[in-house]
Image 1 (cartoon, rainbow, N blue to C red):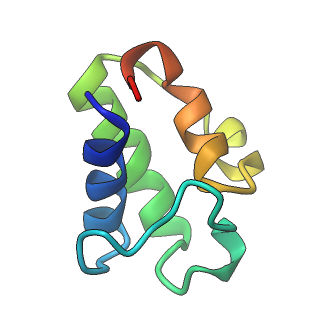
Image 2 (tube, helix red, strand yellow; image 1 turned 30 degrees about the horizontal axis):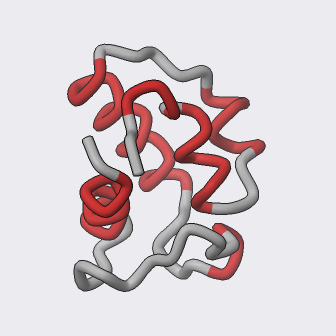
Length: 77
């Protein structure tokens, strides 16, 4: 998956129009980044990549780039 596709997936999870997010976007500034979005993100990553992320790693992410880092081997530039 390319980074742009990953960002579109994240846009969908937080219910924003495609192309809204930037890689350096701070997650705490996103209205849609709530507990449900975090669970949805974990489920989407598991479905897309077969990776089981620990909730504390997702909760600890501060930026979109941090989320990309959690799945880095599966997301290409």
